Image (cartoon, rainbow, N blue to C red; front, side, top):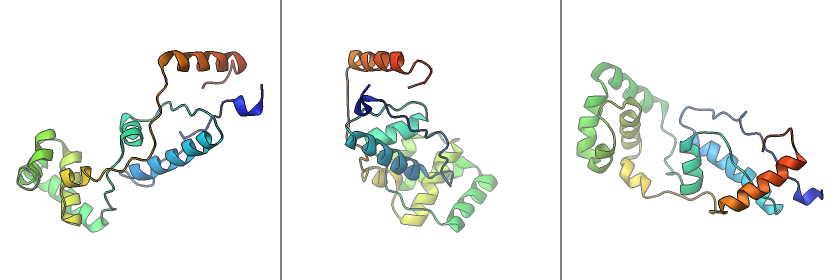
Amino acid sequence: MPKSRRPVRICCTVFFPRKKDDGGAVIDFATEKIEEVLAEGRLPILVGGTGLYLRSLLSGIAPIPEIPAEIREKVLARVKAEGPQKLHAELVGTDPDYAAKIHPNDTQRNARAAEVFLATGKNMTWWHTKVSIHLRRMTLSGSVCRSRLTSWSRIWPVASV
């Protein structure tokens, strides 16, 4: 098989974000690798990972800046002391649209909304309107994908594609 027709496999399973909320780093890494494969005229195939990362890759991610550690710690201390419901009640006042989308008991999302607002002065709804698309959309019909995967599996019977 000519080299240009061979599938490219890039192992991203060893990539772990440095921080719990460093989704942007994952998206940047994946975008760079996908663009490299596309530039070579090859078809990237994405498998595994989380739905959040895949949605962010295809639909974009809000460019929320890094939150200072002292703000994050302050918010987490409040969650432990007062519970996420208190943060949610405040969120109703600062960002009613986002508050309507999340449950008052959702510790992670209520804390994130609070820390973003404290650090930036902008609420989550505002940030979500600033989404940047990282990757141009590519769609292939299921039959084309099945055809390519089937032919690759005959060539690379032991490899997972």
